[in-house]
Amino acid sequence: MKFYNSVGPNPRMVRMFMAERGAVAKLVKVDTRGGENLREPYLKKNPAGLMPTLELDDGTCLSEITAICEYVDETTPGLSLIGATPVERAETRMLVRRVDLNIVEPMLNGFRWSKGLSYFEGRMRCIPEAAEPLKQTARDKLAWVDGLIKGRTFLCGDRFSMADIFLFAFLDFGFKIDQPFDPELSTIPTWYATMAARPSAKA
Ligand SMILES: N[C@@H](CCC(=O)N[C@@H](CS)C(=O)NCC(=O)O)C(=O)O
Image 1 (cartoon, helix red, strand yellow):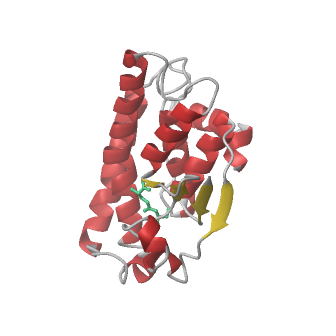
Image 2 (cartoon, protein in one colour):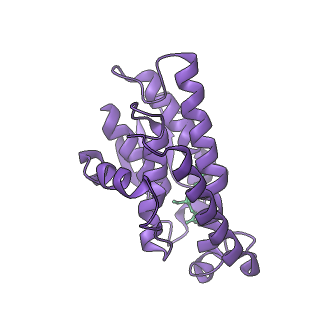
Image 3 (cartoon, helix red, strand yellow):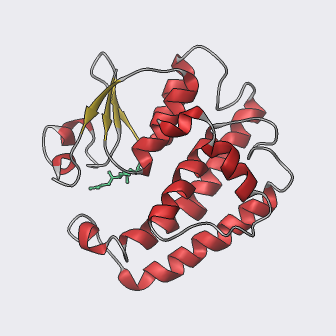
């Protein structure tokens, strides 16, 4: 397998997931700053022009980070990080979707349309006036998730899952884009420290 890799939290999330699952792929560096992701031959592998992409040995290309992780999880021996039962899998996907729609997307667009505007304005439609409300939405929804997981070790209780890796990768990125989480939250700060100490966080 080849993993088309770049800077940024999306590739990082998958690298961390693969490290946790013991999956190995050859890393192929893509220069996003130079726009390599927006040109052929990369666009044939991922028509969205986004990073990362996992290319299988038969040439099949998979993109969208949670889809890549699901594939890796199903094809790598060992304990699943999605879940062992239908209920566990549904819980993981429920948390991932809540984090993605409510926290990650508003946080990233808040960044892209403010601090990241000079980079992103030629790459996507930007709405600068929406940036601050989106950042506030991400903060509000993180507080909501914090309440949901109060008293838990991981997002799905005692069970470490893709939902933890997903939220961690983006909250960690939040520090780089002036959107750190509120240290007064009930559960996230301790959970974050536990996640940051995992060897996979260096992937
Ligand atoms: N929904 C996509 C998001 C991917 C994404 O936005 N990746 C960023 C890197 S973290 C990217 O490719 N940005 C485009 C660019 O820098 O031109 C996924 O799940 O893979």
